[in-house]
Length: 140
Image (cartoon, rainbow, N blue to C red):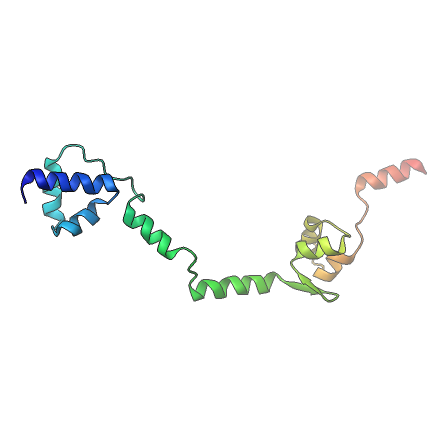
């Protein structure tokens, strides 16, 4: 293969989106020989990092694949965050929305800061705020 042909092949590979490494492997050259060749070629338009055809193909082939360990961890987290109150199962946010007595943020605060059970937190009516108490005192 002549030097003009080699340059044309390398530029064509770069234009099609192949990485330097993919081009090197296709041509069958070592890393060092490819470095020497590329140092002699001016301004080859290689694809950006992570944008080569091989990189994109690899991402597409792995899309939607979930390792078993990750699936088990997600399920354990889901099980840990699911509570059952009066026959209704769900997260604290879902339970607060279902019972409609307090907001989800108030229910979470009751559980974490005040040490209430989830059932108490989502079924106990809201306490009056300090502003509501001062208004009641003024009306008396």
